[in-house]
Image 1 (cartoon, rainbow, N blue to C red):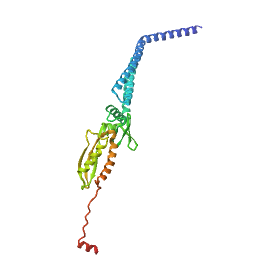
Image 2: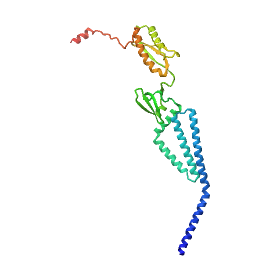
Image 3: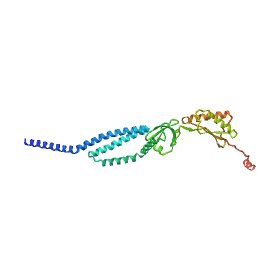
Length: 292
């Protein structure tokens, strides 16, 4: 009986000791924990509001939607990570080693994915500075095609015969890009060869009339016609009409056909490459050798 009473007293004493320690801990760390929770909740509210403000600013600046979503995601995750570190430090967690470990891990991942990171950086630069946009026809890395999609890591082109080409953004951001239809107007460069026996003035009149009759050819700047070269088998005439960018290929192919028909109608010859071959008879000495 006495032993039971002693155990009860010891248990009560242990409970009292734990309660006192709990109260001491609550008094010591309770305000810090409460303040840390308030900072966490306030930080989350601030981050949410800041992301909305940045989102509206990007909308007003007409930032590409792909880049906009990606940047907002990076800002959101980065700010929340910083808030988590602040919260952990406020409740007494040692954050220096955690930050160092994450930094080392980030460095290792960066080295392992340096090619992907280069493509990512290239994608950001393309979306920011916009050397081309969706729908543009570009020539880059030996490929000519229409921009089908601009992704963070790659750009997808569709060639004129509808083949898909995936080009890493690092190559595009560091290489040369020819944007064929970025401007509203383009000059169509055409070369037509006529015979040396044909009248140059008549040929130029035919070309001028064809371009003047085409409503897609712009009046300003006006079309130009020059003698471009005295080639081996022809006089080359250069025709330079200006058109809207979307009319470039239709005008190019139509004029190529119409000029041939008009030249034939006006008896203007489009020569083909030819050469004169002179045959000389063998000397008597060589003829005798051959007979032998």
